[in-house]
Image 1 (cartoon, rainbow, N blue to C red):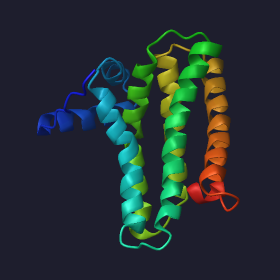
Image 2: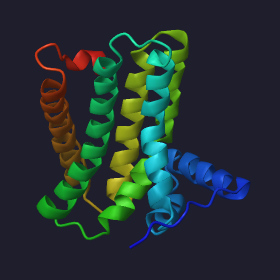
Image 3: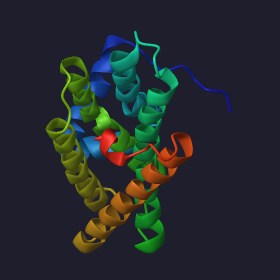
Image 4: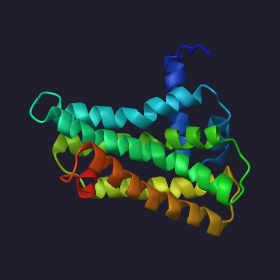
Length: 191
């Protein structure tokens, strides 16, 4: 199946941005709209991975020293985020027998990841930590709400799905980090 070009008009970009912000505001109608929009898949991928690419370019774009080494840190973070989305869908569907299109969940959460653009600010001013922690916590709040609304999970199942997903992400980050970087990899550098 050939790839179709992404619509790039100002109206489309504004609509995507507005939908992403509405999802962050826990707007259920925006979640439903994005879940069923096939064009949201490509936009979601752009939203999901662009902050990692931008942070990498800002942090190391002009410096060739250890370029490949540090690229791997950003690659690990991006892969862990993408992996977490798949784990959430697998747990919701296969453990708690939720019935929904997994691509819909991935679209919603990819749009919600627009909040990761805030992680560019530390790259500009040289601080990390509290902002990235706040971003992570808010994404967990959004994830909980999406699991409750889109997958219609019970409260305890949504919480269990998130806990299993977080543990998996930590294990995934550690495994990928050790494969790509070796014994020097520590997850603390990711946050």
